[in-house]
Length: 168
Image (cartoon, rainbow, N blue to C red; front, side, top):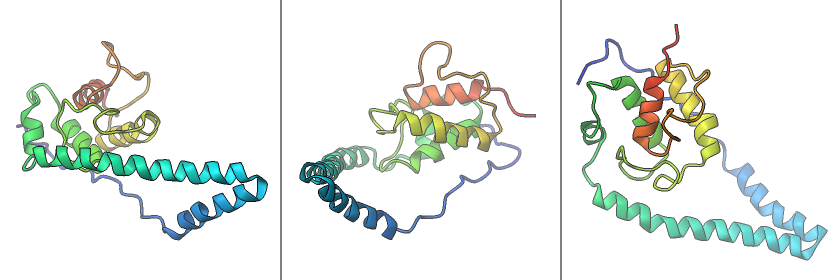
C-alpha cells in the first residue's frame, strides 16, 4: 500500500449535544398533542413507540453482522480493494466516516442504505461533503452517480470520490 506523504486530517467530530432538550421535547410533544386533540397525542406516542420498536428490531441484525465480522478492521477492508488504482486517503476517509456511523466492521460490498441503514439525505448532504472536504476533493459538477450508475455500495462511494478532481 502506498504511504501518503502526510496524514489525512482528522475526522471532524461535533461536540455532543446535551440530552435534556431532546428528552424535554419528547416528553412535551404528546402533552401538546393531547391539548389539541386526543388523536394527535396518541399519534405522537405511537410514532415514538414505533421508532423504539424498529431500533430494537435492528439491534439483533447488527449484533449478528458484528459477530460474523469479528476481527475485521481497516486492514481487511483495504485488502478487498485495488489500492494500486485508488487513493489511500479516499479509502481511509470513507472508512473512518462510515465506521463512526455503524455498529459493525465495514466491507466494501456493504450497501449504504440497506446494510448500513444510512439516510440518503444525510449521506449526500452531510457525509459525502465532509469526506470530500477532508481529502481535498471537489464535488462541483459531480452529480450523484459514477457515470455508470448510482452510489449504492461503499466501494461505489470510494470510486466516486476518487474520480473527483483535487482542490488546488
